[in-house]
Image (cartoon, rainbow, N blue to C red; front, side):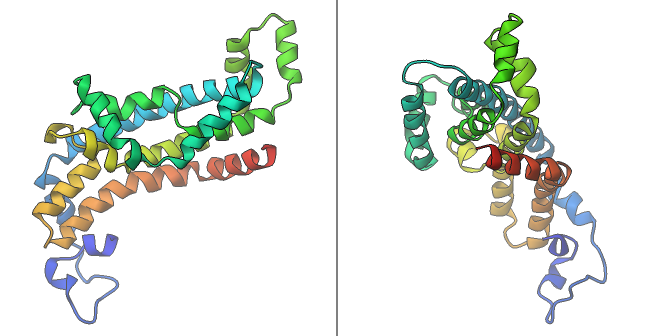
Amino acid sequence: MVRTSLIDIGALYQIPPRIIPEILHWDNFRMALDAYPFGRFFANSLLITTLSILGVLLSSSLCAYSFSRMEWKGRDKIFGIILTGLMIPFFVVMIPQYVFWNALGLTDTFVPLVAPAWFGGGVFNIFLLRQFFLGIPRELDEAAKVDGAGHLRIYGQIIVPLAKQAMIVIGLLTFLASWNDYLGPLAFITSERNYTLMQGLTLFQGSYSAQWNLMMAATAVIVIPSLLVFLIAQRHFIEGIAMTGIKG
């Protein structure tokens, strides 16, 4: 991808191909980004991803706290029913969701892409955090209750700080899923001004399918943020997965 983004169209079909190009055409990136308003696409993707991460971390951790630290009738049965959601692919619920949001007049907005994150945060995220919360000693809850703390205080001042590694894992997975999401925006976004980067890349491919060097330049710009985020959070990601598995 990087090599193709730095060569001209003639060198792309050179036989035998050169691994390292003789001349690096950095202007490919400028030409690719000027073809469409990728700055606006980037801002749209960043806004959707940021709101999704915040919503997932808040709602999934609250749900996980309820399923792991609170006692209420039918808790385990309801949790088992919720887990069946892992077997339902997005393709099955895509049309009903579109009908629902269209009836509310919210298609071609960011609401259908962001709102679900604030209402549960995803079955897998709830499951992962619940497994982590179960490994935190309940003596901490009891000591806090003796001091007069309620559930919200225990959740905010004890459970969440201790689950920082798991929260980082959830945040990273949500970032990758939202940043690279194509099917969701394709279903709900119709106007070009609201396009995400993935939609913009498809739009770019439709107009510049023969200029693969420019196509790869645009792709590299989209992939780089994901690589940077993963490299920065790699240690926390591995530790969080390991700790969650042990404590589960």
